[in-house]
Length: 267
Image (tube, rainbow, N blue to C red; front, side, top):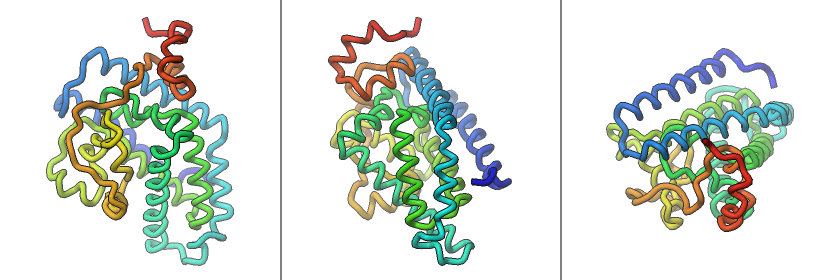
C-alpha cells in the first residue's frame, strides 16, 4: 500500500484533534461522574493498551495485509466499477456492514467474545475506552477486513480512509458527553447514548447497537436498543495495567484472582 495521501494524513490529524477536544469536553462537562481513582486507572490502562497494541500491529506489518487487499481488489464485486464517488460510497457502506457483522459475531461466539470482552471490561465510559482492545481482537478484525476488502473490491486507499473515519467514530461514540439533537441524530449515525447502552453490564442490554458509523444496520436487523444502563462494564476483576488486561482473555475470573498477585500491579 502506498504512503498515505494528503487526505488520509489530514484525517489522521483530525482524529488526533478530535481525541484532544473530547478529552477537554469530558473534563469540563462530563455527562456522568465516575470515581477519580477508577477513572485514572481506566485512563492509564486504556492508553497503555493502545500504545502496546500499535507497536505489535506495526511489527506484524498490518499495512502489508492492506497491500494484499489493494493488489487483489480488482477481483471483487466492485472491481469493474469505475473509480469515483459512487464506488467510494458503495465501498464505505459495504465495509461498514462488514464491521457491523464482525462486531455482532464478537458478541455471539465465545471464541471471539473472550477477546472482545476486554473492550467491555472498562467500568468507566469515556473517550479512552475507545482505545481499550485486546491485540488478538484487533488482529482478527484486520484479517477479516482485508479478506472482505478483496471480496468487495475496495481499493487500498479507500480502506485507509474507511479505517480513519471508523476511528473518528469510535472516539466520538465513547465520549462521556451530551450531544444536542442526539435523539434524531442517532437514527443516522451511532451516537454516545446508543453506544453507552452497548457497554451496559447486563448482557441483554450490551448485546445491541453493534453499528460503528451508520445506525441503519441496527434498525434493519432489529438490534437497536435505546435505554440508559444502570451500570457500565462487566463483572470482571478490574485490570490495573496492560498485562492484566491482556490476561483477562485467557483466564476465568476465578483463575485470574488466583494469579493476580503474580502479575505486575500499579503502585
